[in-house]
Amino acid sequence: MSSSKNSLANKAQAWSARFAEPVDELVQRYTASIGFDHRFALVDIEGSLAHAEMLAKQKIISAADLADIQKGMAQIKGEIEAGQFEWQLALEDVHLNIEARLTALIGDAGKRLHTGRSRNDQVATDLRLWLRSNIDEIQGSLTALRSALLNLAETHAATIMPGHTHLQVAQPITFGHHLMAYFEMFSRDASRLADCRKRMNRLPLGAAALAGTSYPIDREWVAQKLGFDGICTNSLDAVSDRDFAIEFCAFSATLMMHVSRLSEELILWLSPRFGFIDLPDRFCTGSSIMPQKKNPDVPELARGKTGRVYGDLIALLTLMKSQPLAYNKDNQEDKEPLFDAVDTVQDTLRIFADMIPHIEVQKAVMQAAAEEGFATATDLADYLVKKGLAFRDAHEAVAHAVKACVGRKCNLTDLNLSELRFACGLDTRADLISEDVFPLLTVTGSVQSRQHPGGTAPQQVLAAVQRGRAELKL
Image 1 (cartoon, rainbow, N blue to C red):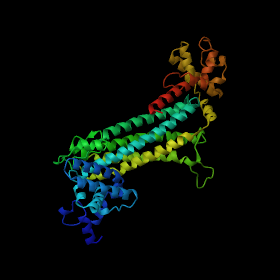
Image 2: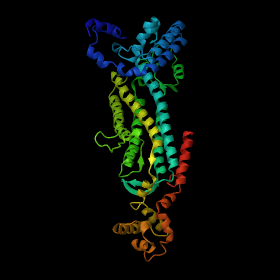
Image 3: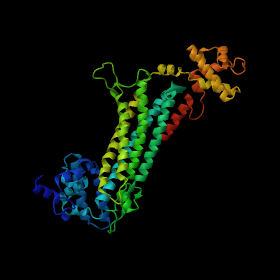
Image 4: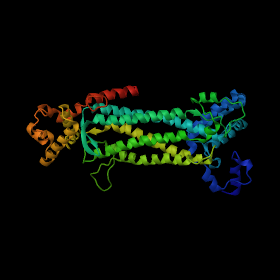
């Protein structure tokens, strides 16, 4: 940029009169935020219009100035929505770009708009307005995902599958019960997001640069106009803290951790080694060299994108950790991690809400897997306890039976009554094991026996689905 052009650009700055030389071209690029904060444009206009109305109501600006500001802002909004607005790097950020255009359109009234506020409280307000709108959209997508899980869980309330600990077959459960575990996780995430919104929904505007303003402003009126629950009650805190953005990123990191766990299971289940499910082709890709491959790219990418959302949280925590009060230019770096977290979470939730209903479940494969690995051994131990044997003795007896079956390469249900008694070391205790044990050693009998709230019995899974629907008001 030539020195004359640089000088003209510097004159466009709201603060240029204090300086004797123009901003260096590299510094101008380094310090500008317009490349990313133009996303605030519409909420910036919304906040400015509320501020202008308040100024006119308080007789700080005239009714004529307000009318000009409203007219000019309407034109600017139209230009932005039509993609015709010319963003200028020399004007640093979204706020000065809009203000400069407004002044070009309506003259001195545009210069009066900034009365009683600073870019510090303006950007803090924009950030909250923008994030609040996105939180509401994300909450809607989270509801859609939870609803999809409920529907699939209801369909498969009685579909037997192996439950795992240490990725080893542990006990039989149902696929519906397994899905409802994720419903509970995502429900807690929804609660965390609602809490975040509640704490965030306070108006910073009126704090000005850091100490408030001497103009007779009405902050409560502006808060109500913009849909805030109240005002930030300390001007230093209002302009300098970003804990609401950190809290959102903490929610996002927790949510994506849950998504990643679900993704890991979808990836495993889709593998031929499991073969529990299939996913529609539109959520998968092939290989450039192996024509037989069907890769679960969506779950894999969600698992990978979880790491970047963790990074967004750490970036914001690190950004804020050493800042003295009040506002510092460091805070310009708060937006890109927040934008990334919002975009990643929203896209992930939308695609998973679309994918979950179309999971194809291989019921027979799931049940066959549940019948491996002595999944009903605990049921046999519980049976012996109910017959009067101490649990530790029952545990040892069943362990002996399992050991015997491993040697014979058979399952517990392959033994007849006398063989089962002998394998348990209880062949002299006919009173402890009778024919009624065998229904309990089937995976269906095992699942049915968990008849309590939170249990895996199909009736309990259906009851959990109904509770979920009531929670979502479906």
